[in-house]
Image 1 (spheres, rainbow, N blue to C red):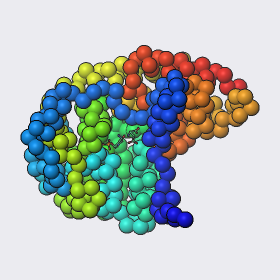
Image 2 (cartoon, protein in one colour):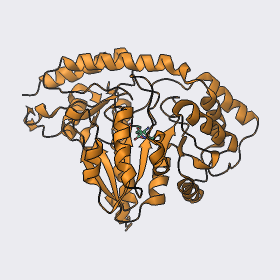
Image 3 (cartoon, protein in one colour):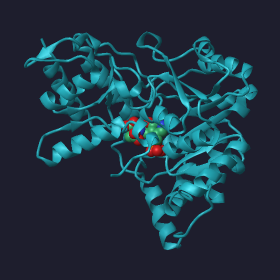
Image 4 (tube, protein in one colour):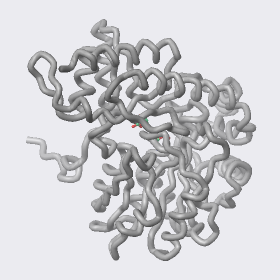
Length: 397
Ligand code: PMP
Ligand code: GLU
């Protein structure tokens, strides 16, 4: 009999990926499912990036690359960090990986020992907790509720710090809440982090360009904590390149070297063609993304106004990313056909079966009172989905 490892058995399946898989299966059976489950732009990769990939192939960039990425790619990322974030990361501080997901796993495997505590503000992105568990770290979850726009303060952070705290991990703009930390809010976190130089803060900024309130603010901008911050980013979201698999970090050199070592044993490096294509994205002026960002903002406004018509739904005003994370707890205890709904996962299952809309329950994001809607879909699809949700919820008694 095959005996799987305790480490694997303790790990949850990715809820976002599980829901996307389920809705693909139901669609294949001919069901008219609207899937708003996966966080994936519904745009195609810009033509100039595809052209750069075709050229890379014709130029025979088909062999193993340096583990941390081609030199010219890392130089272009270094320029991007300076141009967009005013952050100085030399080429040696940058490691390119097979998606930001792997970047995060590399960092955690590099610095977490069994029993080290990692502070994760909830709601959090589904993979944070599981990656920490795989490294045998102890996730310490702090709840940042809807009434605080799902953000933590320096004081919240400080209350969770113990002698075992090794890391803080969060995203801004946030998946799943769309919340964006302001410069002042980040400065407040920096104020606390400075007092604990043993803590590394992983700031996941993969949605930096999908921000409706202006300039993105990076945690590493504060010189007093620059050496404690790992900035994670990637091309999946802004450049609609989810399938190409490229993420990267800007980090203190010691951590960059450690991630290079981990990756040298696990994946070698990400795809050579993807790397060459990404150089063109890094050199591009981010203003070319303005149409996509306006489209996301229009969709956000549409979804907020349609959800606003549903009695019992509470919601924040998300300033970035392409998710909303409504509180649906007023529906708990209600019934349909003799089945009682008692949490958001069950509500999502009901909305899938009754409304044919695939969403992701809040449990895997650390908040079982909410569910996540990805609004990376056309306005027509979103309107139809919101009506289905409204109608299905009205059937609960
Ligand atoms: N961080 C966050 C907050 C995400 O939502 C995602 C999912 N795309 C990732 C990291 C990983 O992105 P990728 O591996 O596609 O670069
Ligand atoms: N990050 C996206 C999401 O949250 C894609 C799926 C995944 O990588 O988990 O839905």
